[in-house]
Length: 301
Image 1 (tube, rainbow, N blue to C red):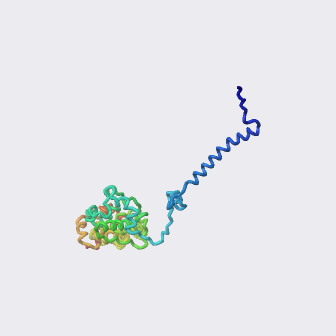
Image 2: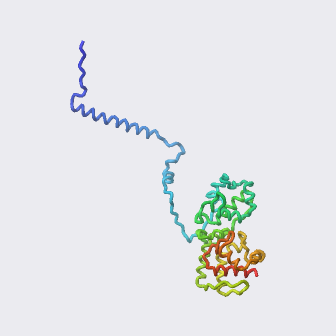
Image 3: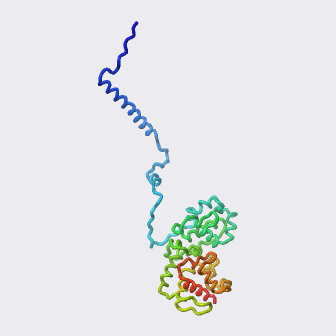
């Protein structure tokens, strides 16, 4: 019995063309249908807003942002709680890296015993693993706001500290960045540099006479320059006796200082001592700084 010969299914050119087209078209159609099925089967769960336009915009927003502020607008200071949540809670909420844990009285007791001024100064200058100002800049949070946060944390652990003095009206928050940070611990760091600059401008026309010797009568110009510099810079700490600064007019506080020769007292004012920066953080001339010292000393004689 003989086998029937096998015939070629494609017998005409038209059939060949149809077979070639089908070989390409069928897989493409299958792929498109699968893609459509997969896309349609993806559903966003109830309550999920990860694909929300606002959320997506936040995710793709650039890291750098430009914030335009009105330099003449009144400064609105944040509360201690707001500063704590924005800056301090990163470490103090959990007691990270030896930071006293928020509301933990045992952690805070030895700190509170040091007094508010010491805690404030430590927050401004840094200590151990804690960077100065919690890693922020004076443009972000003023010294006054940092002080408020210190009082807020300490008071939640058993202290009874009052908020630091409110900076003078119209003070610029960026002023602290110019070197008046220790004076800021007196509650006026935001104004220190700006006030110093104002004092320098006011004194630009005043003859810079050499400071008189101890006990000598100051010239009118030197006395005026000394009083102006004290008003604009020195009183930030000396008016209230902050950070162990001898209080203006307090004979007891000044007595130990005046046991030293006046040249030594001038040297402290010019080059700094303890928490006090050189020249109080100002750019005043040596003669004006000495005149300011003479002005303060004359108030206790």
